[in-house]
Image (tube, rainbow, N blue to C red):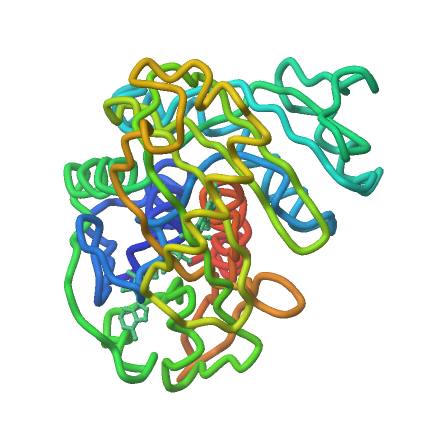
Length: 344
Ligand SMILES: Cc1cc2nc3c(=O)[nH]c(=O)nc-3n(C[C@H](O)[C@H](O)[C@H](O)COP(=O)(O)OP(=O)(O)OC[C@H]3O[C@@H](n4cnc5c(N)ncnc54)[C@H](O)[C@@H]3O)c2cc1C
């Protein structure tokens, strides 16, 4: 196969999609090789566990701001290509609050492209916060969205192959033109890559049934994030989070963390309880699931760079931390630009 993408999480899928749609490559020339595929669940596969929406969780460096913007302005087109909102992607208004004033470069950049973005007045802030914005965001139904992506790619001829690689060199065959390494946290252990800058940042979420909540709300503190994300096309699931635990590899969930999530999210949006049609106490909330996932965080930011292995390009594209859905299409564009430069 000419183009081999190792990894079938959101970053590998966006990369395959970009190769097909923006570079007009034949689907039959692309194979996605991965230990875990959309539909699977494993602590070694982050993408099904994301919240996931477009928010201000990502960094304020120039590259990340560009990746976010490129993804946001392309998401509507991607949604239409995948068959409309039922693919697991829909618009949703979002309000974000900060305990401290966020970086000016971030806000200035967001103002250039977020739809209906408004900076909140002091009277609109929640107690203890110093800054807030409201805008038209996107919410993903992550498990559904990655399966819709896989289906679309397969319909266009892309092959998916289940295989765990011990060494990245195993991805190369005689007719290979380029390999993309989109293994996320797997890049920590994969021989030939062994990136010691990779760390897990563990998150835990609670999913509750909440037809009465129709918008997203986030609060960013120094070492914590509290978020409420409406999951589209999910029979009224609401994702409540969260935790940001660096270097924790734990896949189990903890009841004391669930209690803390419920306390913080219902303080931030009391309507979760006060408008709940099944009762106004915590015990009246229908808890559907608790889950933990490991964000693929990389010290110094994402790694998107070309390396030559036995005369052929190995293009790394990983380290999306807590923003693979909202920045991953921009990351894919950057990764594929190396291919275009080499005229491959
Ligand atoms: C609780 C939580 C909430 C989040 N919320 C959001 C959000 O709201 N918005 C957002 O944008 N992001 C969010 N994220 C982050 C997002 O989930 C990640 O950035 C994204 O899933 C990373 O995707 P990936 O493709 O890089 O990695 P993964 O999804 O982990 O995929 C890696 C792929 O590589 C394969 N692989 C790895 N090693 C090997 C090997 N040796 N051989 C073969 N295959 C291999 C795996 O099997 C898998 O297919 C959240 C994450 C968590 C945990």
